[in-house]
Image (cartoon, rainbow, N blue to C red; front, side, top):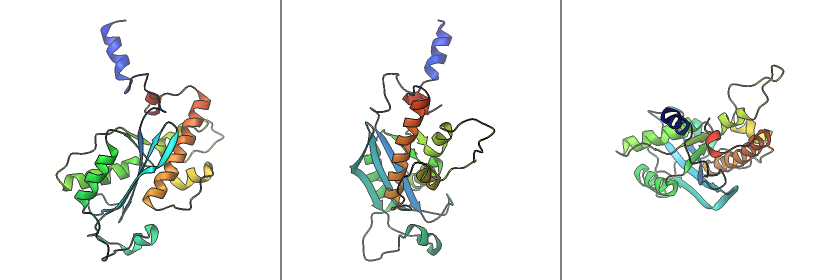
Length: 209
Protein backbone atom coordinates (compact mmCIF):
# COMPACT_ATOMS: atom_id res chain seq x y z
CA UNK A 1 0.00 0.00 0.00
CA UNK A 2 1.39 3.42 -0.90
CA UNK A 3 1.77 6.08 1.78
CA UNK A 4 -0.87 8.18 0.00
CA UNK A 5 -3.42 5.36 0.16
CA UNK A 6 -2.59 4.77 3.82
CA UNK A 7 -3.28 8.42 4.65
CA UNK A 8 -6.47 8.37 2.58
CA UNK A 9 -7.71 5.32 4.50
CA UNK A 10 -6.95 6.99 7.84
CA UNK A 11 -8.76 10.18 6.79
CA UNK A 12 -11.95 8.20 6.16
CA UNK A 13 -12.11 7.20 9.82
CA UNK A 14 -12.58 9.59 12.71
CA UNK A 15 -11.93 6.98 15.37
CA UNK A 16 -9.73 3.95 15.95
CA UNK A 17 -11.53 0.81 14.77
CA UNK A 18 -11.25 -0.65 18.29
CA UNK A 19 -13.47 2.08 19.73
CA UNK A 20 -17.01 0.70 19.83
CA UNK A 21 -20.36 2.48 19.83
CA UNK A 22 -21.13 0.79 23.18
CA UNK A 23 -17.87 1.91 24.80
CA UNK A 24 -18.23 5.54 23.72
CA UNK A 25 -19.59 8.22 26.07
CA UNK A 26 -22.37 10.14 24.30
CA UNK A 27 -24.13 13.17 25.71
CA UNK A 28 -27.68 13.46 24.39
CA UNK A 29 -28.65 17.11 24.33
CA UNK A 30 -31.71 19.31 23.96
CA UNK A 31 -32.30 23.01 24.52
CA UNK A 32 -35.47 24.99 25.12
CA UNK A 33 -35.23 28.50 23.71
CA UNK A 34 -37.24 31.70 23.35
CA UNK A 35 -37.44 31.05 19.59
CA UNK A 36 -35.47 29.99 16.53
CA UNK A 37 -33.51 33.16 15.74
CA UNK A 38 -29.82 32.50 16.40
CA UNK A 39 -29.05 36.21 16.87
CA UNK A 40 -31.96 37.43 18.94
CA UNK A 41 -33.31 34.41 20.82
CA UNK A 42 -31.81 32.90 23.95
CA UNK A 43 -31.53 29.52 25.68
CA UNK A 44 -33.98 29.00 28.54
CA UNK A 45 -32.96 25.50 29.54
CA UNK A 46 -30.29 22.91 28.68
CA UNK A 47 -31.06 19.25 29.31
CA UNK A 48 -28.64 16.39 28.71
CA UNK A 49 -28.20 12.69 29.48
CA UNK A 50 -25.23 10.34 29.35
CA UNK A 51 -25.58 7.34 27.05
CA UNK A 52 -22.95 4.59 27.27
CA UNK A 53 -22.84 0.80 26.96
CA UNK A 54 -26.35 0.91 25.49
CA UNK A 55 -27.67 2.37 28.75
CA UNK A 56 -29.27 5.77 29.35
CA UNK A 57 -27.85 6.82 32.70
CA UNK A 58 -30.74 8.86 34.08
CA UNK A 59 -28.88 9.41 37.36
CA UNK A 60 -26.07 11.09 35.44
CA UNK A 61 -28.26 13.76 33.89
CA UNK A 62 -27.89 17.52 33.51
CA UNK A 63 -30.60 20.15 33.61
CA UNK A 64 -30.17 23.88 34.09
CA UNK A 65 -32.69 26.71 33.76
CA UNK A 66 -31.01 29.98 32.82
CA UNK A 67 -31.61 33.48 34.06
CA UNK A 68 -34.08 35.08 31.63
CA UNK A 69 -33.40 38.40 29.98
CA UNK A 70 -35.58 37.52 26.98
CA UNK A 71 -39.18 36.37 27.24
CA UNK A 72 -41.68 35.35 24.59
CA UNK A 73 -45.25 34.50 25.63
CA UNK A 74 -45.92 32.53 22.43
CA UNK A 75 -43.02 30.10 22.92
CA UNK A 76 -43.70 29.90 26.67
CA UNK A 77 -46.98 28.17 25.77
CA UNK A 78 -44.92 25.37 24.16
CA UNK A 79 -42.12 24.78 26.68
CA UNK A 80 -44.00 26.01 29.77
CA UNK A 81 -40.99 27.87 31.19
CA UNK A 82 -42.27 31.01 32.88
CA UNK A 83 -40.29 34.10 33.86
CA UNK A 84 -39.91 33.31 37.55
CA UNK A 85 -38.58 36.30 39.46
CA UNK A 86 -38.59 34.45 42.80
CA UNK A 87 -36.07 31.73 41.98
CA UNK A 88 -32.48 32.76 41.33
CA UNK A 89 -31.24 31.03 38.21
CA UNK A 90 -27.62 30.84 36.97
CA UNK A 91 -26.45 33.38 34.43
CA UNK A 92 -25.81 32.30 30.86
CA UNK A 93 -22.07 32.11 31.56
CA UNK A 94 -22.54 30.05 34.75
CA UNK A 95 -24.92 27.66 32.97
CA UNK A 96 -22.52 27.23 30.05
CA UNK A 97 -19.60 26.47 32.36
CA UNK A 98 -21.70 23.85 34.19
CA UNK A 99 -22.70 22.28 30.88
CA UNK A 100 -19.13 22.23 29.51
CA UNK A 101 -17.95 20.43 32.66
CA UNK A 102 -20.70 17.83 32.19
CA UNK A 103 -20.06 17.44 28.46
CA UNK A 104 -16.28 17.01 28.48
CA UNK A 105 -15.04 15.51 25.20
CA UNK A 106 -18.12 13.33 24.67
CA UNK A 107 -19.86 12.97 21.31
CA UNK A 108 -23.03 15.09 21.20
CA UNK A 109 -26.29 13.52 20.02
CA UNK A 110 -29.36 15.69 19.35
CA UNK A 111 -32.35 15.86 17.03
CA UNK A 112 -31.60 18.48 14.37
CA UNK A 113 -28.26 18.98 16.11
CA UNK A 114 -27.33 22.11 14.18
CA UNK A 115 -29.96 24.16 16.03
CA UNK A 116 -28.95 23.21 19.59
CA UNK A 117 -25.22 23.40 18.87
CA UNK A 118 -25.52 26.76 17.08
CA UNK A 119 -27.58 28.23 19.94
CA UNK A 120 -24.95 27.07 22.43
CA UNK A 121 -22.11 28.35 20.24
CA UNK A 122 -23.74 31.79 19.97
CA UNK A 123 -24.06 31.86 23.76
CA UNK A 124 -20.40 30.85 24.09
CA UNK A 125 -19.44 33.69 21.70
CA UNK A 126 -21.35 36.22 23.79
CA UNK A 127 -19.38 35.13 26.84
CA UNK A 128 -15.96 35.14 25.17
CA UNK A 129 -15.65 31.35 25.11
CA UNK A 130 -14.61 29.15 22.16
CA UNK A 131 -17.14 27.14 20.17
CA UNK A 132 -17.83 23.50 20.97
CA UNK A 133 -15.28 21.21 19.34
CA UNK A 134 -17.13 17.94 20.09
CA UNK A 135 -18.14 15.58 17.31
CA UNK A 136 -21.91 15.55 16.74
CA UNK A 137 -24.56 13.10 15.54
CA UNK A 138 -28.09 13.98 14.43
CA UNK A 139 -30.91 11.48 15.00
CA UNK A 140 -32.93 13.11 12.20
CA UNK A 141 -30.14 12.26 9.73
CA UNK A 142 -29.38 8.84 11.23
CA UNK A 143 -33.06 7.84 11.08
CA UNK A 144 -33.07 8.38 7.29
CA UNK A 145 -30.26 5.80 7.01
CA UNK A 146 -32.60 3.14 8.42
CA UNK A 147 -35.25 3.69 5.75
CA UNK A 148 -35.68 1.45 2.73
CA UNK A 149 -34.49 2.96 -0.55
CA UNK A 150 -37.51 2.47 -2.80
CA UNK A 151 -39.63 4.55 -5.17
CA UNK A 152 -42.63 2.88 -3.51
CA UNK A 153 -41.74 4.42 -0.17
CA UNK A 154 -42.19 8.17 0.19
CA UNK A 155 -39.43 9.70 2.26
CA UNK A 156 -39.90 13.08 3.94
CA UNK A 157 -37.24 15.79 3.84
CA UNK A 158 -37.55 16.37 7.57
CA UNK A 159 -38.44 13.99 10.38
CA UNK A 160 -39.47 15.56 13.67
CA UNK A 161 -38.82 14.14 17.11
CA UNK A 162 -42.54 13.36 17.25
CA UNK A 163 -42.15 11.30 14.05
CA UNK A 164 -39.41 9.23 15.68
CA UNK A 165 -41.34 8.87 18.95
CA UNK A 166 -44.36 7.58 16.99
CA UNK A 167 -42.25 5.27 14.82
CA UNK A 168 -40.45 3.69 17.79
CA UNK A 169 -43.44 3.81 20.17
CA UNK A 170 -41.68 6.12 22.64
CA UNK A 171 -43.78 7.90 25.28
CA UNK A 172 -44.13 11.66 24.69
CA UNK A 173 -45.19 12.42 28.26
CA UNK A 174 -42.36 14.91 28.90
CA UNK A 175 -42.20 16.30 25.34
CA UNK A 176 -41.08 19.94 25.07
CA UNK A 177 -38.98 19.86 28.21
CA UNK A 178 -35.24 19.85 27.52
CA UNK A 179 -34.54 16.75 29.62
CA UNK A 180 -37.68 15.00 28.37
CA UNK A 181 -36.75 15.58 24.72
CA UNK A 182 -33.17 14.47 25.41
CA UNK A 183 -34.57 11.21 26.84
CA UNK A 184 -36.77 10.62 23.77
CA UNK A 185 -33.76 11.35 21.53
CA UNK A 186 -31.58 8.92 23.50
CA UNK A 187 -34.12 6.08 23.14
CA UNK A 188 -34.53 6.88 19.43
CA UNK A 189 -30.75 6.74 18.96
CA UNK A 190 -30.55 3.29 20.55
CA UNK A 191 -33.41 2.06 18.31
CA UNK A 192 -31.72 3.54 15.22
CA UNK A 193 -28.37 1.88 16.01
CA UNK A 194 -30.18 -1.45 16.51
CA UNK A 195 -31.86 -1.09 13.10
CA UNK A 196 -28.60 -0.13 11.38
CA UNK A 197 -26.85 -3.14 12.91
CA UNK A 198 -29.64 -5.39 11.64
CA UNK A 199 -28.97 -4.15 8.11
CA UNK A 200 -25.18 -4.59 8.32
CA UNK A 201 -22.29 -4.50 10.77
CA UNK A 202 -22.06 -0.93 12.04
CA UNK A 203 -19.23 0.75 13.95
CA UNK A 204 -18.72 4.23 15.36
CA UNK A 205 -17.06 5.57 12.21
CA UNK A 206 -19.98 4.46 10.04
CA UNK A 207 -22.41 6.59 12.04
CA UNK A 208 -20.57 9.65 10.75
CA UNK A 209 -20.72 8.64 7.05
